[in-house]
Image (cartoon, rainbow, N blue to C red):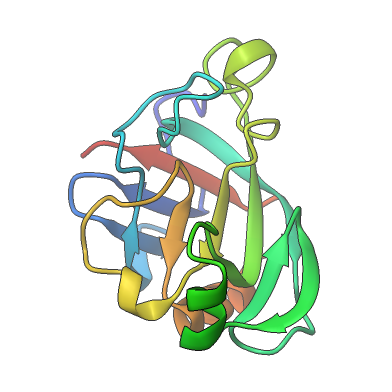
Length: 167
Protein backbone atom coordinates (compact mmCIF):
# COMPACT_ATOMS: atom_id res chain seq x y z
CA UNK A 1 0.00 0.00 0.00
CA UNK A 2 2.77 2.43 0.89
CA UNK A 3 5.47 0.84 -1.32
CA UNK A 4 7.27 -0.87 1.57
CA UNK A 5 7.41 2.30 3.64
CA UNK A 6 5.17 3.25 6.50
CA UNK A 7 3.69 6.75 6.45
CA UNK A 8 5.34 9.40 8.63
CA UNK A 9 2.53 9.30 11.18
CA UNK A 10 0.08 6.45 11.78
CA UNK A 11 -1.72 4.27 14.29
CA UNK A 12 -0.49 0.69 14.57
CA UNK A 13 -2.72 -2.02 16.04
CA UNK A 14 -0.96 -5.26 16.97
CA UNK A 15 -3.32 -8.21 17.42
CA UNK A 16 -0.74 -10.51 19.05
CA UNK A 17 0.24 -8.05 21.79
CA UNK A 18 -3.17 -6.33 22.12
CA UNK A 19 -1.43 -2.93 21.92
CA UNK A 20 -2.26 0.17 19.88
CA UNK A 21 0.64 2.56 19.21
CA UNK A 22 0.49 6.11 17.91
CA UNK A 23 3.67 6.47 15.84
CA UNK A 24 5.34 9.57 14.37
CA UNK A 25 8.54 9.34 12.31
CA UNK A 26 9.21 5.82 13.61
CA UNK A 27 8.89 6.87 17.25
CA UNK A 28 6.10 5.59 19.50
CA UNK A 29 4.37 8.64 20.96
CA UNK A 30 1.84 6.68 22.99
CA UNK A 31 0.91 3.03 23.61
CA UNK A 32 -2.47 1.80 24.78
CA UNK A 33 -3.83 -1.62 25.79
CA UNK A 34 -6.68 -2.77 23.56
CA UNK A 35 -9.01 -5.67 22.95
CA UNK A 36 -9.59 -6.99 19.44
CA UNK A 37 -12.01 -9.67 18.22
CA UNK A 38 -12.73 -12.81 20.20
CA UNK A 39 -13.13 -14.57 16.80
CA UNK A 40 -9.61 -13.60 15.72
CA UNK A 41 -8.63 -11.89 12.48
CA UNK A 42 -10.61 -11.86 9.29
CA UNK A 43 -12.07 -9.64 6.66
CA UNK A 44 -15.55 -11.00 5.91
CA UNK A 45 -18.77 -9.22 6.80
CA UNK A 46 -20.60 -11.04 9.59
CA UNK A 47 -17.45 -12.82 10.83
CA UNK A 48 -17.08 -10.66 13.96
CA UNK A 49 -13.33 -10.73 13.29
CA UNK A 50 -10.89 -7.81 13.35
CA UNK A 51 -9.77 -6.95 9.81
CA UNK A 52 -6.10 -6.69 8.91
CA UNK A 53 -4.27 -4.23 6.69
CA UNK A 54 -4.20 -0.54 5.92
CA UNK A 55 -7.12 1.63 6.98
CA UNK A 56 -7.82 5.28 7.58
CA UNK A 57 -9.90 7.04 10.19
CA UNK A 58 -13.01 7.67 8.12
CA UNK A 59 -14.80 9.72 10.79
CA UNK A 60 -14.37 10.90 14.36
CA UNK A 61 -17.57 10.73 16.39
CA UNK A 62 -18.41 12.00 19.87
CA UNK A 63 -16.04 14.95 20.37
CA UNK A 64 -18.25 16.80 22.82
CA UNK A 65 -19.72 13.83 24.68
CA UNK A 66 -18.89 13.06 28.32
CA UNK A 67 -16.69 10.13 29.25
CA UNK A 68 -18.68 6.84 29.27
CA UNK A 69 -21.38 8.28 26.99
CA UNK A 70 -23.25 5.48 25.19
CA UNK A 71 -23.48 5.23 21.39
CA UNK A 72 -25.83 3.13 19.29
CA UNK A 73 -25.57 3.35 15.50
CA UNK A 74 -22.86 6.03 15.89
CA UNK A 75 -25.32 8.31 17.72
CA UNK A 76 -25.09 9.32 21.37
CA UNK A 77 -28.11 7.95 23.23
CA UNK A 78 -27.93 10.50 26.06
CA UNK A 79 -27.08 7.67 28.47
CA UNK A 80 -23.89 7.42 30.48
CA UNK A 81 -22.62 3.90 31.19
CA UNK A 82 -23.07 2.63 34.74
CA UNK A 83 -23.21 -0.86 36.22
CA UNK A 84 -26.97 -0.38 36.72
CA UNK A 85 -27.38 0.42 33.00
CA UNK A 86 -25.32 -2.66 32.13
CA UNK A 87 -27.62 -4.81 34.27
CA UNK A 88 -30.63 -3.30 32.52
CA UNK A 89 -29.18 -4.10 29.05
CA UNK A 90 -26.99 -7.20 29.54
CA UNK A 91 -26.74 -8.04 25.81
CA UNK A 92 -25.49 -4.66 24.55
CA UNK A 93 -22.09 -4.43 22.89
CA UNK A 94 -21.08 -1.23 24.67
CA UNK A 95 -19.62 1.51 22.47
CA UNK A 96 -18.59 4.34 24.77
CA UNK A 97 -16.99 7.81 24.90
CA UNK A 98 -15.56 8.20 21.37
CA UNK A 99 -15.60 6.43 17.99
CA UNK A 100 -12.88 6.39 15.33
CA UNK A 101 -14.69 4.76 12.39
CA UNK A 102 -12.26 2.92 10.12
CA UNK A 103 -12.32 2.57 6.36
CA UNK A 104 -10.20 -0.01 4.53
CA UNK A 105 -7.69 1.17 1.94
CA UNK A 106 -6.99 -2.13 0.16
CA UNK A 107 -9.49 -3.04 -2.59
CA UNK A 108 -10.84 -6.59 -2.32
CA UNK A 109 -8.96 -7.10 0.97
CA UNK A 110 -10.60 -4.65 3.40
CA UNK A 111 -12.43 -2.35 0.98
CA UNK A 112 -15.50 -2.96 -1.18
CA UNK A 113 -17.97 -5.86 -1.34
CA UNK A 114 -18.19 -8.27 1.60
CA UNK A 115 -14.83 -7.28 3.12
CA UNK A 116 -15.39 -3.52 3.45
CA UNK A 117 -14.34 -2.39 6.94
CA UNK A 118 -16.51 0.73 6.74
CA UNK A 119 -19.67 -1.24 6.02
CA UNK A 120 -18.70 -3.78 8.66
CA UNK A 121 -18.77 -0.84 11.11
CA UNK A 122 -15.26 -1.45 12.39
CA UNK A 123 -14.34 1.17 15.00
CA UNK A 124 -11.74 2.05 17.56
CA UNK A 125 -13.97 2.88 20.53
CA UNK A 126 -14.28 2.98 24.28
CA UNK A 127 -15.79 0.12 26.26
CA UNK A 128 -16.52 -0.48 29.94
CA UNK A 129 -13.04 -0.31 31.45
CA UNK A 130 -13.51 -3.53 33.43
CA UNK A 131 -14.03 -5.43 30.13
CA UNK A 132 -10.57 -4.52 28.84
CA UNK A 133 -8.50 -7.40 30.18
CA UNK A 134 -5.66 -7.57 27.65
CA UNK A 135 -7.21 -10.32 25.59
CA UNK A 136 -9.37 -10.45 22.45
CA UNK A 137 -13.02 -10.12 23.45
CA UNK A 138 -14.67 -7.74 20.96
CA UNK A 139 -17.09 -8.40 18.11
CA UNK A 140 -14.52 -7.16 15.55
CA UNK A 141 -13.81 -3.61 16.70
CA UNK A 142 -10.78 -2.37 18.60
CA UNK A 143 -11.84 -1.61 22.16
CA UNK A 144 -10.00 0.81 24.43
CA UNK A 145 -10.34 2.16 27.96
CA UNK A 146 -12.46 5.31 27.93
CA UNK A 147 -9.75 7.74 29.04
CA UNK A 148 -7.38 6.18 26.47
CA UNK A 149 -9.78 6.49 23.53
CA UNK A 150 -10.46 10.12 24.47
CA UNK A 151 -6.70 10.78 24.61
CA UNK A 152 -6.14 9.13 21.21
CA UNK A 153 -9.18 10.91 19.72
CA UNK A 154 -7.70 14.28 20.69
CA UNK A 155 -4.38 13.45 19.01
CA UNK A 156 -5.58 12.21 15.62
CA UNK A 157 -7.49 13.64 12.69
CA UNK A 158 -9.96 12.16 10.25
CA UNK A 159 -7.87 10.62 7.48
CA UNK A 160 -5.17 9.37 9.90
CA UNK A 161 -3.66 6.09 8.65
CA UNK A 162 -4.18 2.89 10.69
CA UNK A 163 -2.25 -0.34 10.16
CA UNK A 164 -3.70 -3.50 11.73
CA UNK A 165 -1.42 -6.54 11.81
CA UNK A 166 -1.12 -9.79 13.65
CA UNK A 167 2.48 -9.14 14.75
